[in-house]
Amino acid sequence: MADYNMHLLVCGGTGCKASQSELIKMNLKNQLTELGLEEDIQVIHTGCFGFCEKGPIVKIQPDNTFYVSVTPEDTKEIIEEHIVKGRKVERLLYKDPSTKTSIIESKNMDFYKKQVRIALRNCGFINPDNIEEYVANDGYEALAKCLGEMTPEETTKLIIDSGLRGRGGGGFPTGLKWDITRKVEGDQKYVVCNADEGDPGAFMDRSILEGDPHTVIEAMAICGYCIGADKGLVYIRAEYPLAIERLKTAIGQAQEYGLLGEGILGTDFNFDIELRYGAGAFVCGEETALIHSMEGLRGEPTFKPPFPSVSGYLGKPTNVNNVETFANIPPIINKGAEWFGSIGTENSKGTKVFALAGKINNVGLIEVPMGTTLREVVYDIGGGIKDGKEFKAVQTGGPSGGCLTKDFLDTPIEYDSLIAAGSMMGSGGMIVMDEDDCMVAIAKFYLEFTLDESCGKCTPCRIGNKRLYEILDKITEGKGEPEDLDRLRALSDVVKDTSLCGLGQSSPNPILSTIENFFGEYESHVTIQKCPAGQCKSLLQYIIEDEKCTGCTLCFRHCPVGAISGEKRSPHFIDQSLCIKCGVCYQKCKFDAIKIA
Image (tube, rainbow, N blue to C red):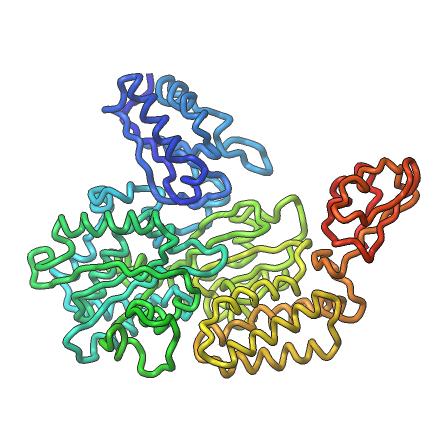
């Protein structure tokens, strides 16, 4: 019989919940009940483990067995074999891609080996709905330390000394922002948590709120203590229902335990938190637009100064940090500025969380020390490119960032190095592309996103980006001219230099970086009307090779527009004037007789 002093941790993040992790948890509980073991063994839902590619995940403690790609049907075998008989379920263990050997513990997997978890320290480890589990893992110790042993000035100096920079994209020193807000006179001040995560493919902040909401609550209270605020506001997009639910639960528990509200921990410090909901506007990630949205106004940015530290929410001094920035605060208070400063690089301290997505084998949520190279992330942690394809580019910084080629793979991930390479850190989206991606189409995709998300307040962003999109669309339609490449550069520079806020100022980055790094692809689209990656439909031609065509009529029968003609058992022909480039004929042909020209 196995040792029944066990916990079964089931990933309860949004991704795994979408893959039936709730049913997995329920099945495990029911089977333990049938065996009379429900009192001895706990089944706990956690936040995201990070290894999303292999979810749903079930981790068994204390032996740290890490089961991947678990289905509801697997639960019976886990209980009968692992719990009752003490034997590992071999087929559910992670297999090393190169050796094909089973790996039991996550710490031995390449995906986790180079990670250092600070912001994500509790995600996948504790039950986010149970404040006692957070407290048992040093939760609220930092707040108690600040209120009992340190003045607001001393606490702020500690954050300054740590070198923590804002993780929302701008990289402004966090402690300095707190200090500026602290020194501004005001009868009312506010702490705002920016949880309006809008980058395509990004889910860093959402996962922290789903897996460890108390760390954000504790950090906001510490910030309130430092700047002299008694009110906190979390601006979160309404499309994050699970994060909202868990945050509400955590706020209620913190209030019940006297960790929010009046007279926190027996002191004269008062602080409470409310939620404000956003409708998913990307521009509201910019702090002045966010503040206007919370005030019930249009989510439009305003010219700075004055900065929110001086005149923010309702015209009062306001400190705005994003979720990941706040998640770093309690460990810094508990372990010290020197500890945090020992991680990372000279100008970029600590770690950074990334949502690793795209044409990568190990899609997931990762946290690495600043200074880790892109190569280490893509190949060591990410497991390389899917299906053995060639790496082509990696987009960092979301729609505001740039696309970096293989020549930049040894670039360390830090604020200054990425900017020098023509990209940026951003909030943490990282999308990998392979040989099948067209970089002109990629630039067009990101520009279309920022064009849709522009608030339209300033002319350079509203009109300039529209003109840029029209030029890119013209090029991908095979109607581009050599002069269009100069127009793209010139207009991109104007938009960058004259737009009101960061959205417009950074929107041309994907264009400029792809022109710089993939100029040959732009030239091919313009001079010979050919898309090297075969992605731009208007530049494709599907051609049937006579010597390979058997006249089976399969392509003829599946063509939706009747563009294919020919007799049975004779070579067929595609009328290019009728072809809509859908690719059905190419997919259906069993004889490899259709090629893309």
